[in-house]
Image 1 (cartoon, one colour):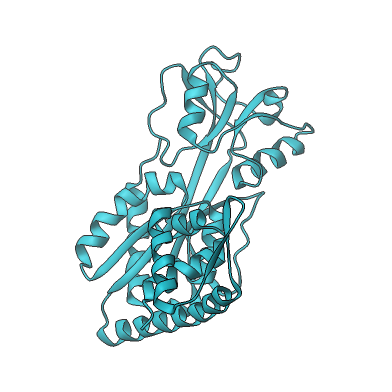
Image 2 (image 1 turned 30 degrees about the vertical axis):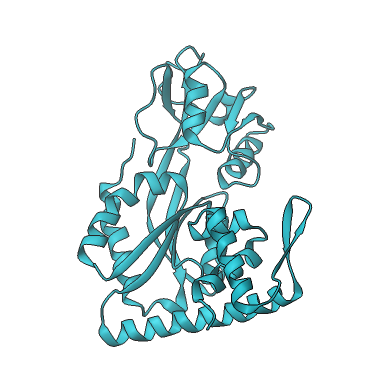
Length: 302
């Protein structure tokens, strides 16, 4: 009999195109995923992966087996849903995806109570960006995703997904204390013309927001430092490098040498929980959504 966990590993490699991508999505190490694939090859007596350059590719047999695995995993999820409905309890596995500041600022206020009140629920967390989180929920690999967007940069949600708004999260302009704007009560986009920005890489929601906002003010922003992690951005700001725009959720205390200035009109991102509509009957989905809403007032916000 083929092991379900090994099928899941193969399906993830087929979906993400690499062992590293599969490992990140599943919350495993790349070595663990490789071991699962090797065991699956022995189990099926079939060559499933071939080396190509520095990476690997799936054989035709592996592609066919991965397609079958997708159907099998869907059947397993449906079976879990039916069992939960019959028992009326939140049981089984539930994976939550969240972008970094939500994982840091919101989930610590939510997970302890969720785990304590529902001991039959096996909760796991994967940190990833909103675009990939939505895609993972759509594929059925993640049950609930915490995502965000901005008013001028909306996040597209596929028709088969449902969402509920958790709240809004303001962002501030952050500058070194030596900066010419450091003493101002607030700033507008026009005040930021000519500045060298620290921002997430192109393709991220925050980067798109910055570009659209500054273009509306009639200028092209100079994004000099493409930094994904907010803590790295703060470290640069503390050394007098660039300016940034950081949301308050999960931001934590500012280092000495950095000040926050409100931007008017205030940029605010909206946070949502997203899940597949077909799984809405699952008690695990319902109790997790309830916990996320209840935990929002206790979030860690600057």
